[in-house]
Image 1 (cartoon, rainbow, N blue to C red):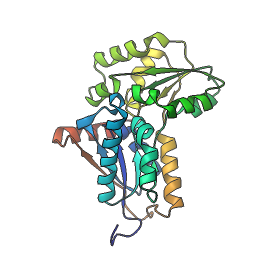
Image 2 (cartoon, rainbow, N blue to C red; image 1 turned 135 degrees about the horizontal axis):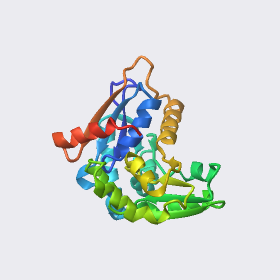
Image 3 (spheres, helix red, strand yellow; image 1 turned 180 degrees about the horizontal axis):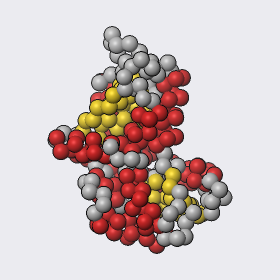
Length: 260
């Protein structure tokens, strides 16, 4: 990082689009003194319906860009990119803390009511071995229902979350589970933005997402590597996007203002 002090680098956070902003909100709450650089690859969103090779290539390019910008740690705030690319990128950047997200199956299966757990995620996340290992590890005492949700992340990208077509899409994807599951795991970082709409379809059950756990893990890694920002530093957030229009960046700020 050249002449910059060790604590002065950004924490890079990236996603295929706006979904990672749900994770960013948890990161900012947990680490208010850090300077966050959020990059949304909206020009290529969503990743959850691409090939593994495409996701790997896009993720690698973003990490290169963030390292070039002086990031001291990177959060892959995208379940699909974590599943496909995290292990390879950690091997390529052994000195850089790279934190990923994974579906919050563990807390869901450890919750008091855990007989039937519905996992909503992208087709790619559910197809990969990493997810099947997770389900095998934590799902032994629960019926884990894995429901791919093609099109949902892409629809959330457009905002306008109260429009009837969005609830209708959720109804088509998971309506058959209404009143029959104990909890829902939101296995894509876009989905917390439509938590209310998901509950209106499946019932008022606990929803599990990975933002808070990811934020705690980032804090642990920054502390462990001596990279935590000093309490005297003012925290900041900067948004960038591969679809670099004023409208897109305004949409990012709008999502950042939503409660998750």
